[in-house]
Image (cartoon, rainbow, N blue to C red; front, side):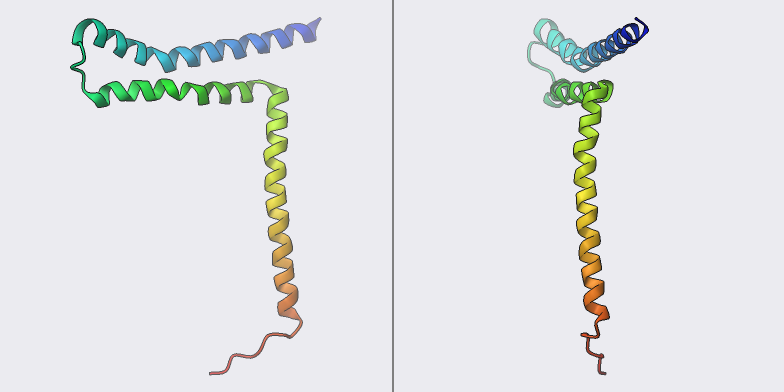
Length: 114
């Protein structure tokens, strides 16, 4: 029973964070749109109108990130996927470094003449 309450609490927090992120992202766009529709009638500076719309479009990235970092199962798979990639890169780098050292230590190199 206690585990179920904890899981429901985590889900509630995740949902509230997602809702807050949505509201924060889309409210500036809604305000600019309403202002333009009712008061300004298209005379607003293009840059002032573009910034809120870009902020609103970025909400897709915010919501994905929030979901990844608030859901433990998704976060675990996300870390596993990206940490394995990093481990493979570092393993490949270590292998190539070791091979370079082995080639240099066999005496195959020639002395530098001046």
